[in-house]
Length: 231
Image (tube, rainbow, N blue to C red; front, side, top):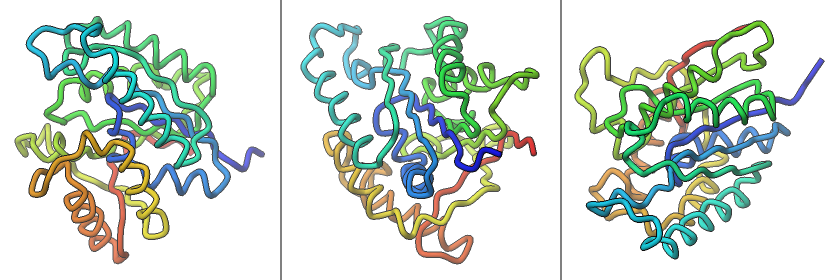
């Protein structure tokens, strides 16, 4: 019987993977699991009125190098990055996104998949969520036995808390022993961080981790919504 698990984290942008489940990813690595990260969008050109990758090539190269540095710190097995348009993924045919996720699923045969919550205000998060659900549909040969949705600061908490959009966690991971390394990895993306009280600040990351930890009686935690689990 297979003891260690193969984990796939599918994030829309560079830094989402750490904000959403960095501490949990590190716990998986420390327990002997194999962790793979898939990042869908380039994460930069939405700052421009018109998308022009060529004018941002140097910055994109730097941002991608930060992702590889963060992955190395966390000890992940592989990092795959695509260049879907940042904050414009609603203009991409969903099937094109699904195919990229399917390719990874078929390659590594993950047991557990982590991705964005469906109600996030960021459209790329929603598209990524929908693509993962489609790519991991429970066909007879599907290896994915658990799908968990994470929260992403500066997106999940900015959504209106209607019943169909609210993030309602029912799965918690104690990250007391891995929180410091999560912050170490997040510092690779220092250029993407903001000053407190912006929610994408180091202080906000710590506040959220402490709040989620308080809920389950530990120092730091990450919270998830369980999408599906097959035993």
